[in-house]
Length: 126
Image (cartoon, rainbow, N blue to C red; front, side, top):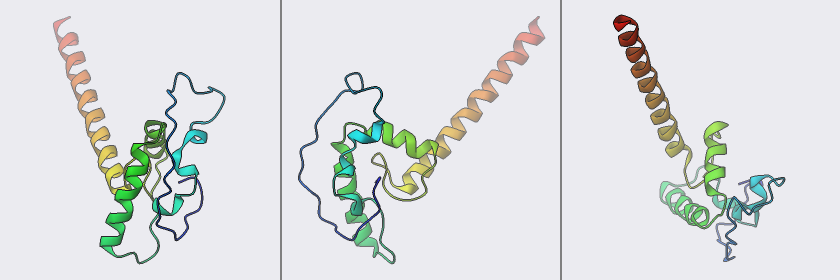
């Protein structure tokens, strides 16, 4: 993901080294531990005019790589905060990230509405 995409759709079989976020060097950026930094970047971004079946297969392969990545959560949060418009990041496609962001926005609005209603009740009672 952090390298430019290439045309290879092969998945390198490299065992992930699980490092807890507690044990990881706090000065090193999260992406230095990313499994996708190896040579699998072509899995994470769609080539132009990719057929649907090929895209779905490539995305599933990318998600399998993400599933064994020790920094998947950090990667996902990065992609949601940026927001990254393309590719598979943190085990989510761009469309899946849009859904997560929409749900977060709705939840934030609901929390604000609930807080305003509670503040109104307190003000009315006081």
